[in-house]
Image (cartoon, rainbow, N blue to C red; front, side):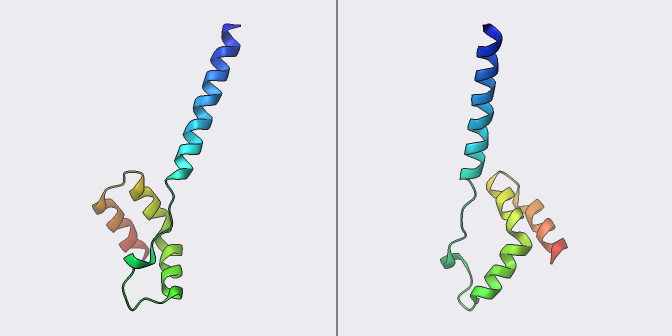
Amino acid sequence: MKTSKTITALAVSVLSVLILATVFAAEIPRATAPLNATEGQILIVKNLIGDILDEVQNGLGYAEAENKAESRV
Protein backbone atom coordinates (compact mmCIF):
# COMPACT_ATOMS: atom_id res chain seq x y z
CA MET A 1 0.00 0.00 0.00
CA LYS A 2 2.80 2.40 0.88
CA THR A 3 4.61 1.61 -2.40
CA SER A 4 1.58 2.51 -4.53
CA LYS A 5 1.24 5.85 -2.71
CA THR A 6 4.92 6.56 -3.28
CA ILE A 7 4.65 5.71 -6.98
CA THR A 8 1.55 7.86 -7.32
CA ALA A 9 3.21 10.80 -5.59
CA LEU A 10 6.29 10.42 -7.79
CA ALA A 11 4.19 10.27 -10.97
CA VAL A 12 2.25 13.38 -9.98
CA SER A 13 5.49 15.22 -9.23
CA VAL A 14 7.04 14.29 -12.57
CA LEU A 15 3.91 15.31 -14.48
CA SER A 16 3.77 18.62 -12.62
CA VAL A 17 7.37 19.41 -13.54
CA LEU A 18 6.75 18.54 -17.20
CA ILE A 19 3.66 20.72 -17.36
CA LEU A 20 5.36 23.68 -15.71
CA ALA A 21 8.44 23.37 -17.92
CA THR A 22 6.35 23.80 -21.08
CA VAL A 23 4.61 26.89 -19.72
CA PHE A 24 7.80 28.98 -19.83
CA ALA A 25 8.15 28.81 -23.63
CA ALA A 26 6.66 32.08 -24.87
CA GLU A 27 6.37 33.78 -28.22
CA ILE A 28 8.77 36.66 -28.82
CA PRO A 29 6.75 39.88 -29.07
CA ARG A 30 7.04 41.76 -32.38
CA ALA A 31 7.63 45.00 -30.44
CA THR A 32 11.02 43.72 -29.25
CA ALA A 33 12.35 43.30 -32.80
CA PRO A 34 14.15 46.14 -34.59
CA LEU A 35 11.79 48.49 -36.45
CA ASN A 36 13.18 47.62 -39.89
CA ALA A 37 13.14 43.82 -39.38
CA THR A 38 10.84 41.87 -41.69
CA GLU A 39 8.77 38.88 -40.61
CA GLY A 40 11.03 36.62 -42.67
CA GLN A 41 14.12 37.86 -40.88
CA ILE A 42 12.45 37.31 -37.50
CA LEU A 43 11.59 33.72 -38.46
CA ILE A 44 15.18 33.05 -39.52
CA VAL A 45 16.50 34.35 -36.20
CA LYS A 46 13.94 32.28 -34.27
CA ASN A 47 15.07 29.19 -36.16
CA LEU A 48 18.74 29.93 -35.46
CA ILE A 49 18.62 30.87 -31.78
CA GLY A 50 15.11 30.03 -30.56
CA ASP A 51 16.35 27.23 -28.32
CA ILE A 52 18.94 29.57 -26.79
CA LEU A 53 16.16 32.03 -25.94
CA ASP A 54 14.29 29.23 -24.18
CA GLU A 55 17.44 28.41 -22.20
CA VAL A 56 17.73 32.08 -21.18
CA GLN A 57 14.18 31.96 -19.84
CA ASN A 58 15.20 28.91 -17.83
CA GLY A 59 18.24 30.61 -16.29
CA LEU A 60 21.07 30.64 -18.84
CA GLY A 61 23.24 33.70 -18.30
CA TYR A 62 23.65 36.53 -20.80
CA ALA A 63 27.32 35.85 -21.54
CA GLU A 64 26.75 32.16 -22.19
CA ALA A 65 23.75 32.90 -24.41
CA GLU A 66 25.69 35.53 -26.35
CA ASN A 67 28.57 33.09 -26.91
CA LYS A 68 26.23 30.35 -28.14
CA ALA A 69 24.43 32.75 -30.49
CA GLU A 70 27.66 34.22 -31.86
CA SER A 71 29.06 30.78 -32.58
CA ARG A 72 25.95 29.86 -34.57
CA VAL A 73 25.77 33.08 -36.55
